[in-house]
Amino acid sequence: QVQLVETGGGLVQVGESLRLSCAASGRTFSNYNMGWFRQTPGKEREFVATIDWGGANTAYADSVKGRFIISRDNAKNTLYLQMNSLESEDTAVYYCAAGRAWLSYVRHDYVYWGQGTQVTISS
View: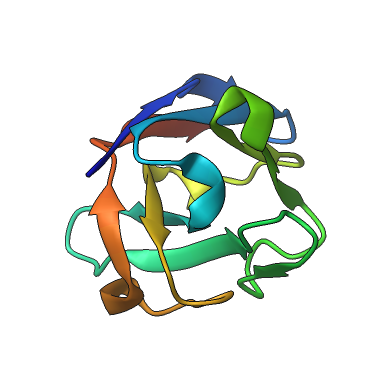
């Protein structure tokens, strides 16, 4: 199995930046496509970004395109989400996930999940 632990969440003001990290352990990290999802109370967990196993290809939700950057360092077994120009609507619990599907935005395609990290953007 793969264990995933997100870190880097916190409180930040509108317009500022934050970088989330997801440390992976267990099975070989480079074998998996990775994704970021987020969830707020009363809403379904929604897709944010994904990156393929080699890190050469990425895809983003329209709501974050141009502001967020997903990346990975397979040598460090770590996934990142750089969040820029943060908005109040970005407030959520952010989850990293691992799966075998290529550049999937479908939650079902991810089989391993982290515990989540809270990101709060204040006005």
